[in-house]
Every structure is written in C-alpha cells, then in structure tokens.
Amino acid sequence: MRVRRMLLLALIPALLALQTACVGAPNYLTPDGPRYAGSYAGAAPAYSGSLKIVSWNIKYARDIDGAIETFDASPALQHADIVLLQEMDVKGVEAIARALKLNYVYYPASVHPNTGRDFGEAILSPWPLSDDAKIILPHKSPRNGQIRIAVRAWVQTPGDPVLAYCVHSETALMSPNQRMAQMQALLDDVPDEARLVAIGGDFNTVTPIERDVLLQTMTGAGFAWLTEDAGATVQEGGVGVIMDYIFARGLKAAAAGVVDSDASDHSPVWVQTATTEK
Image (tube, rainbow, N blue to C red; front, side):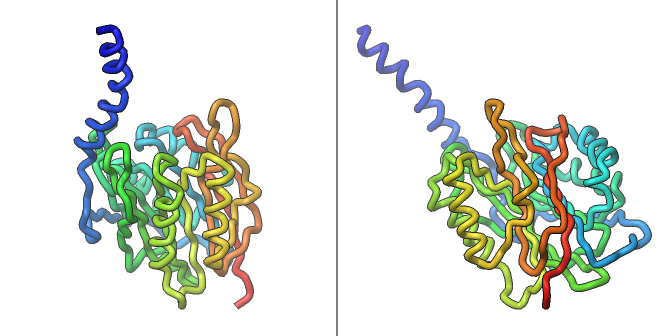
C-alpha cells in the first residue's frame, strides 16, 4: 500500500499538467479576428527620418497605470514612432493609446487561463497604420494548448513606410524546433520587396543556446539585431536574461537601451534607428 501511495503521489503533478492541457485555453483560430483598432493620434509630430521603436511585454496587462507612468517618466520611451506590446487585452491597449495619443491595432490570440482575459499583441504609432493582419504561428503550447500569434501592420511615416511585426513566441516548454518553426512562419510572411521592416517582441529565450538559435535564424534571413547593446530585459533568479528583441531590415541602430519598470516582469526595450543605404 505504501508503494502504491507513493506512486500515486508521484503521478499527481503529471496528472494536473495533463488536466490543464486538456482544458486548454480558448483560442481565436481565425486570422481575421477578433480585431480592435483605434485612432488617438493628434497633430502629426516632427519627423526627422530617424525612428524610435519600443517593445514591451506588460505582463497580463495587469499594471497599465504603471506602464503609462513609465512611458511618461522615461525620455527614452517618449515620442516613439512604433510601440510593440505583448500580453495585452484591449482595455489595456486602449488606455495606453489614449494616454500616449497613438493609433493602434490589436489582435488577441486567446483567452489566457490565468486571467480569464484576452491575451495578444498590439502595434501603436502616431502615424497611420494600414494593411494589418494576425499571423497564427504553428504549434500549440504543450502546457495549456494556447496558440501564439504575430501582429503585422504598415506604419505610414512621412518617409518610407515601415512594415512592423509584434510577436510573442512560445516558452522553452516547446521544443527548439517548434519554436523556430514559429519564427519561420513569421519570416515567411515578410514580402521580399519590403525595404524597411521591424520585428520586435518577447522571444522567450531563457538560455544562451535559445538566443543563439534565434539570432542565427534572424540574421540568416537578413535581419540585424538592433538592441544587441541594450542589456537584459528580464531578471531570472537575480541573473539578467535577454528575452525581448528588436530586429530590422533596412534600419540600423543609433542608440538602444532598456528602461527599469515595476509595471511588469519584463523591462521595455527601445532603439533609435536610422535607415541604411538604399
């Protein structure tokens, strides 16, 4: 009886994990929605041809007031041309867009089982957004059956338009090959003729090996890592880890950094860019 009881106790974690996976997360499996968009940009800001891009995973969109305070208090985040947000619900995106006077497009991937609220990605900009889309990435989470997505939009600056992507790839629970398949699905969406392309978000690279594979994939596709010198974006056990990145084609980094904030377990990462030679 004692051995049997010990076996049952040992199986409890696996059974609970299986139960979670079976219940799963309600996914939005159609590429055309749900879709939310808003236009809150005021007068057109000055444009020098240099773009500021910000990417931030605001955990479960829980502390939106804190996130807005971080944007307002940090010169490095102010006057951004492209803001990429992950783990958002529409209420949080709407609040940030209103506060910062930005246009936005937002697509949720699923209803997150931890919050019961929508969970997805958004692109915000003071410039008009066009031809937006949701890209459903392959492979569901082995933990809860969630899908992952990327959101795409053309940012219509006064100069050349910029094709922006916001992505949140799966965690290390998924096999490296499956996670890289998610990245390849995003890259397959990028038109060859798009000259200026920015891809940013949370890539969940916990280990140096995961980071190296990601970088090989992106650089192999012609994308430069613009935030290479920005620093760690997450603290894991007191150790800084880079999980959030901004990549680009046709753009180069003039300056980059990370801003400390208590509004999320991730720090926002930013880059000021200039175009490369045509």
